[in-house]
Image (cartoon, rainbow, N blue to C red; front, side, top):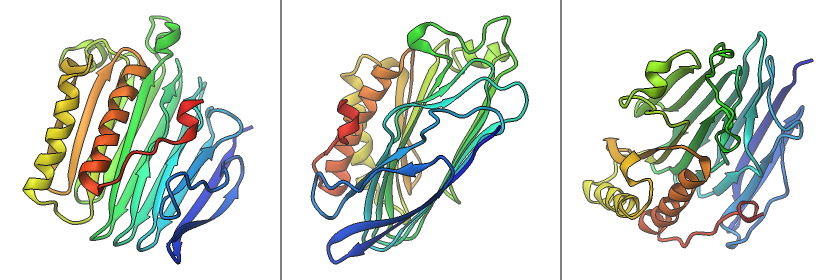
Length: 281
């Protein structure tokens, strides 16, 4: 039996406090609103009680951030796409961020198990004056446990990932377990099994000085990090800056991302970092 879950989140200001109304159908919901850094920023933890997706499961997440609101959304653990013998498992996110609103989309890692058939879509629609930070950390197989995504006996799996900022940036690709050239080539995954992508995006063009400051702060952190040789930052459009890193395990990639997130928060928004409590448990 497959699950179809839907969650809608609507963030808005009530005075100086960001509040949220949520509606859910099926196995997808958020925990209570948390305000560890004051009323302006609402922290939410997205929970999927079944613990993972199998073939045929569909999770739809939609969110709206009204003018002036600020939401930080994370998860208590990894998103898991399990083995499928037929249908795809799909997770889809559409976020609409109004002028003057800020979104931080910071889930923990996604695990693509051996023989999974899965798609993970993310679309972020930013109005002029809206801003966001987000990341996505994808691990093929279970790197920490030494379980491969692509061994000789199990090469039927595939994982499709899509990140879209309409008109600005579209990242879409499918990784197949049988594609050794992509997975092992130095022009592809280079034998690594974790790929992390992080971005800061705006609904209006950033000044060159601001983009350069964000890139410089990321590159300074990269150069001092053990993953420096496998990380890079760029700005393919004047509304987005991007950090990408390859790693053999999730933890060092996540460590680099959290350092850059903390610095970008200060550089872009003049805000001190306030890590969600679930990251420390």
